[in-house]
Image 1 (cartoon, rainbow, N blue to C red):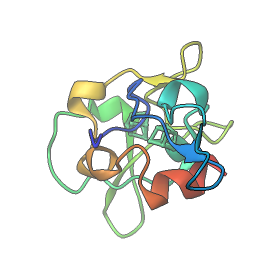
Image 2: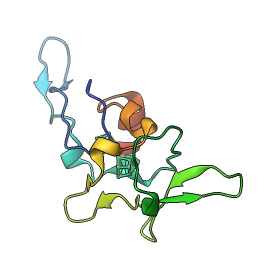
Image 3: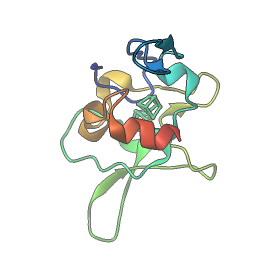
Length: 109
Ligand code: SF4
Ligand code: SF4
């Protein structure tokens, strides 16, 4: 993104470190090198994107959220690949988080 993604294996172009006269390419920002940090956040299902019901929970306000397992990650995250198993149906908030955005970089730490 700017491809919008969360844990979809997306990658944005090289960033640069160093000063302007001697820029040095840093590693590309990619979900594949991030351990899906943003997939531990609370995710509300604000619109119907086709998320399977068994992956969601309803809170005491009646809102639908992605379920999270004991390890803290979203129930839809594949623990082997650390990619989203329902990428085409992922919630709107997941689509709106862009790889390389300030929010993404804050989660990557
Ligand atoms: S924090 Fe950024 S790089 Fe990591 S999985 Fe989320 S969108 Fe991808
Ligand atoms: S639905 Fe997919 S992209 Fe969204 S938090 Fe869960 S695993 Fe990550």
